[in-house]
Length: 326
Ligand SMILES: Nc1ncnc2c1ncn2[C@@H]1O[C@H](COP(=O)(O)OP(=O)(O)O)[C@@H](O)[C@H]1O
Ligand SMILES: [Mg+2]
Figure (cartoon, rainbow, N blue to C red):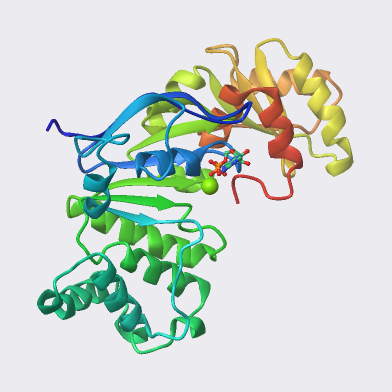
């Protein structure tokens, strides 16, 4: 086997007339943390289900750990861990009993089971809660336990489907520390998220939108290729009421390729070498915003996402009640 742990070529899934995953191709290297970033409904879970052999592709092919997903799914499943979006824990069992139960399901030999469960408890720092019933745990602890149940059989490859959705920011950070820990130990990780800030932590990030993989690269590579110019924060400084007027003024400034609302200020992307901060500020001042402030900022993956996904995504990101970033 090569060091490609996952190889995907033109993978496609249709549900009737609807194409949920549309000719997606990518590779995942051994030891990599690959993030799959996209809003709800973009095809992330459907991709994972095909890679696990749970769903037959409509077209295309893929190999996972060298095995064909269409014909050798039985060989893949014992070697991978899967934390699904709707993971199942047994509320009336303790943490440790849940781990022991899953170890049994995954065929960990009885004599090795206690040691393996102990290792997972230590690896994920679960000691302080190991005797508590799963039903009594908070969201963050349940998520960690669910990760544990996906690890009891020592998989080389882990699929994590939105593992941090709905948990508070500190639990999310702790969870990402565990993900790095596992990657350092050589586990390859395919993780989906709709949180832009989380995707920044991945070695490489694939951007999914409406079933298509729009780009896949390192976070800095994505920023360099999708946003060849510069990103700016523009604060008109007339209060929120002037934001919309300032946005239309910003749109008129030559060299501004994209402008949008970003909470209490505006975000602009300009063509390469089109502007200095002072030139952009001067343009806003002549547009009637005498106190405008302009600051060059690091582009974010949200900027990349909007640049790649286009206007539909931009509307979504400024109006959605549950934006992709927090
Ligand atoms: N079994 C199914 N039958 C019909 N449509 C489905 C099925 N599974 C998923 N879909 C649709 O496919 C699209 C992608 O879904 P999914 O892969 O779950 O997206 P994500 O995980 O990115 O939120 C959605 O529009 C969803 O409604
Ligand atoms: Mg999903």
